[in-house]
Length: 314
View (spheres, one colour):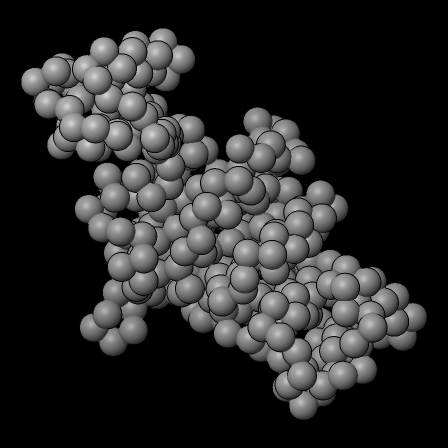
């Protein structure tokens, strides 16, 4: 897992602190006592199925909606409305002026966030370089690909260099190459000291980038920690092994911990280095020939299923 650029054992004031957050929309409970903490310089992944309350949590931290109960603080300051000097907000929907150019969009959002004169010009130049859009800076956004729009969308949220950046599904609909570029851009921002709170269904991204994860269900946090901690506390660190076999094997030729349907063999391994060679030898002695082997450690998907009984994409 990616190591944070800051010492997470320090006693710094949290970048974001959410305690007992409650938000209702009519008879619907969007947040039901959410607790959450984001440390300075940390990349925190916020995971939950659709309707878990992730976007409402983001809106509340950004000061765009008021809680019915609970407390939200940003660097010790109670949130009572938008704080553009401290917080950058990148919504899931593309929030750009489609008939303006990239340069004009950056100028508009920079002014909305308090930038003026030479400071705004320097920030715009940096953002165009950072996003790789210099050569198309004066084209209207309507001519951009989805990945280019996403990059510009993020740049508009981070142009004023906020200390906290809220990202709601920042890579949705982007191809793998574009997603890698966006994640690299965000890592640069984090290395400059910005704390990132990212919600996403792309759990593979967060497995590689996040320092910690918070799992939400029905408007509250049900688990938090590093991926390793969450795996150990839920499904355990056993690896799932699948073998595709040439030939037909009988289940009676293997122990109870091995599932075999003739051409496919599945097992759970506690120590891959020690147990896998023995199992492969058992397959050979039984007359089978391995044509494909897959070993997979449990990850976010398995943790989420264990905690909620649902797939993360439901």
